Length: 245
Image (cartoon, rainbow, N blue to C red; front, side, top):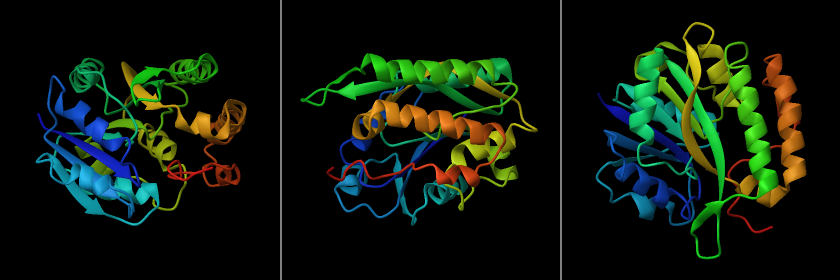
C-alpha cells in the first residue's frame, strides 16, 4: 500500500512545515509528499525542499492545475489532496484508509474542523461562531452525501486508478475541488469519512465570519445545480492570506 500526498501551495511558509511534520509523525507513513508550488516568494520552498519524502514541482496557478499536475506525478495507490494549512491527527492516514476499505469507497471527503493559532503559534480551538459554521456545513455534507456529494479541496481522498481514469481537476474552474468530487461520484462510490481534518480558520478571521458564511450558503445553491462556472460571480479569493490587510 502506497500513499501519495499532494499539496498545492503559494507562500505558505507559516503553515506547510507543520503539515509536513504531521505527515512525518503518522502511524502509517506516506510513500511520498508532492508539493506543487505556484511561485512562492517567501521561504515556503526552503522549509520543505530538504525533506527526503518531499518532491517539489513548480506549476503556475490556478490551484486546479496544481492539484492536477501533482496527481499526475503521484505514484501511490491512494491519493490525498491536502491544502498547506491543514493539520492532521497522528492516525489520520491509517483511519482514512481503513474506513475507505470498509465502506468500499473510491473517493471521499472528511469532517472539516476549524483550528486557530494563538500569539505563540500554538494550536487552539477556533471561536464558537466559526466552529458553528463548520459544524453546520459538516451536517449538510453528511445528510446529502449520497444525493449531492460535496467536500473541499482542503482534504480529498481518491484512489489513484480512479483519478487517472477521470478527467482530473479542471484547470479552468475556480471551484475545481467540488466539481471534481461531484463528477467522479457519478460513477464511483463516494462517502464522507468520520476522520477529522483540522482546517485553519484564517479565511473567516481575515474576511469576517458573516461574510464567509453567507458566501458559502450562496455557493451551495450554485453547487446544488452543478453551476460551477456561474458560481465564480461570488467573490472568493485564494492564496492571499499572507498579504497584509
